[in-house]
Image (cartoon, rainbow, N blue to C red):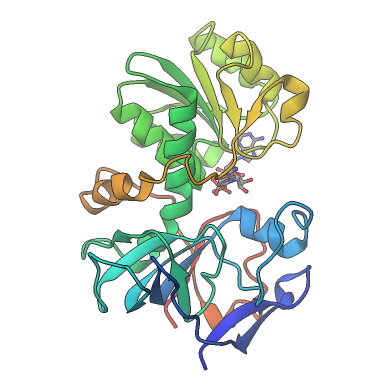
Length: 300
Ligand SMILES: NC(=O)c1ccc[n+]([C@@H]2O[C@H](COP(=O)([O-])OP(=O)(O)OC[C@H]3O[C@@H](n4cnc5c(N)ncnc54)[C@H](OP(=O)(O)O)[C@@H]3O)[C@@H](O)[C@H]2O)c1
């Protein structure tokens, strides 16, 4: 029987226990992959702690992980265009990445130039970045503010928007200013001085992508001249400002991985640096527990 990091109760990282689980059988349209790396993001930590228990029930067995990369191992009925042995990455909307085997209903081929860690860190962040940029309806020549522009979602959104011909302001902490400059954005510091800093550059922006969910929506609405083109991924006070909270619905950006994987392979897209952790050691090392996202659990 294969192993997986099973969530045995809500709480600290020790609630993830490396245990034997049944080998999952791929259903119609699904592949099973032998997981080489799984992405760990802040939403996983919220689920593990129980913060989302009302809105996001965990599966049985409770194996977390919204994204993974691995080698195709078995095909379900009706699957074509992929073969056992192919290297792929997948977003896993119903979880299951933190194990030796995972099922996926949609996937993209992992080019040889993309590392397992990068391939596993891409799917969920790319889907959010592509999806929210679409929902904002941004276009060339416009000005965009990205809150959390140096985070896992924010760096992808920033680079896609810059490539699309937008002027991008990226709200970051002090250590990430050069990083976002290198991505083509104009750095501004998040926090209480954000509005003043933005006003030193521009009076208004066309849209705001809050890829952090850590406050700043009042300033965002002020800068965008209203909430219509402000979207947050995670701010629980969004409705107080009339701002839309974007959810990972199946129709948000189903093509995001196919779109961004070639950019990653050719070096036109960079990801946030990752921490690599052996999956079976993760609970013992009390990780992932920091707010810094996108560590990646590496090969077994
Ligand atoms: N709704 C969805 O579909 C969806 C999808 C993906 C992610 N999410 C959520 O979106 C959030 C971001 O995810 P992520 O993976 O990109 O996380 P991440 O990699 O941890 O990035 C978050 C970024 O926000 C920055 N930040 C911290 N405080 C800030 C503030 N006050 N103002 C602006 N930026 C601030 C952080 O900077 P420092 O390093 O300086 O702290 C970091 O760069 C998480 O809450 C996640 O759960 C939602």
